[in-house]
Amino acid sequence: MPKTRKRKAWVIQWVWFGEHRKVEPNILHILSARWPSRKVLDYMRGLYMNSDLFLVSERFRFTLPRRNWDNMVIHEGPRLSFGHNPTLTAWYVSDLATELDKQNFCEIVRWTQTPGKRLNPESGEIENLGEPIQKEFRISYAS
Image (cartoon, rainbow, N blue to C red; front, side):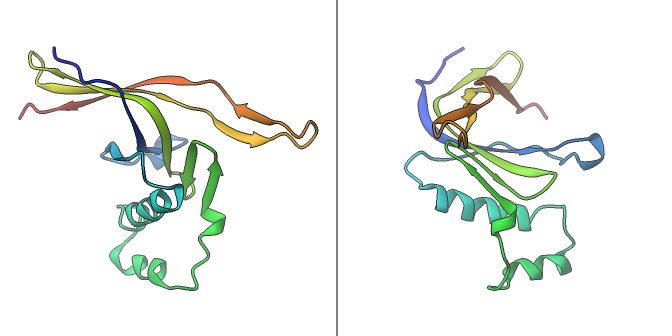
């Protein structure tokens, strides 16, 4: 199975809490590592507002310039979240790699989700919000 070299990129996926809020299909989005976080958030806004979470008639409210998006955005260093449960979450990763599994007709994508970061109000130092997590996403090409 040929593997690609590891690359830097933004990886975006849906994240939800509770099966009643599960998003189908859970598609993996890959963006250029050169994109600044503001551009990544604009992309996520478009995905969120055009998702199956909303009727087409409900999507018009997202196009209004006075819409306050700040309450829907969490910016934690290399991790960005947009929306409420479910959320679109983006991770800036440095080890994105793919592998073709011709035997099972699928592509395997692997990366390490970096934890978010925050300023500790007591110590004044930057701290991680959790530990890095190894992730794997399989995309089937079988019909």
